[in-house]
Image (cartoon, rainbow, N blue to C red):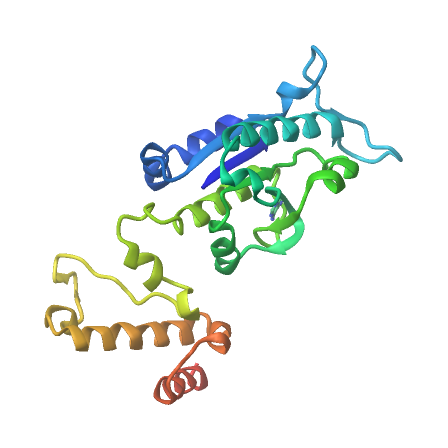
Length: 255
Ligand code: ADE
């Protein structure tokens, strides 16, 4: 997976992605991050990339040409890398514009993006980006939730984090990506580690039993209970047995 980010703050992207699990995944070659500074394509000595909006109004708007030139530069990089390979015949790379007006990001969408070879993110700032360049290059509009941030960098980081951990090899424990929250529309069961007794709380005895069948049943039951308590809306799409459905309903009815 090769992430490309058009941004005015490449350091923000590089620093965040260079830490922890994504940092290790970059070093191991499972993912790459190419943060490109839109300001490098300003085409003027002052490096200004924004201007006043036509029609007036508060704030500044990012100009079309620097964004477009930055996009063409990244396309050139991708094309050069794919020269003479089968990748060259692939459909055009998806360009994701981070905006509160987009479709809400989800685990399902993360899984869809994880199949791509390259993704280009466009991070806006100021009051927005000249609509003409958005129309010209953007294929996907994505929001990370119903609130407004100062720019697209944090949403791009959220998306890259969620996508990266679905790329084979990034999590050393491939089971954890399958059993965790949202897979199968259920939340993850609770986890415990040593000591066995902490203050006046003990680890559930089944976890010490070593009985794998009982353990699997407990994990599943806890996932159903947790989802019914915390996110009952998710149960609509969950595949539950009759018994599990009754358990969930009894919890919801007693809330
Ligand atoms: N840019 C500003 N706010 C945003 C949000 N909630 N999601 C995606 N991009 C954004």
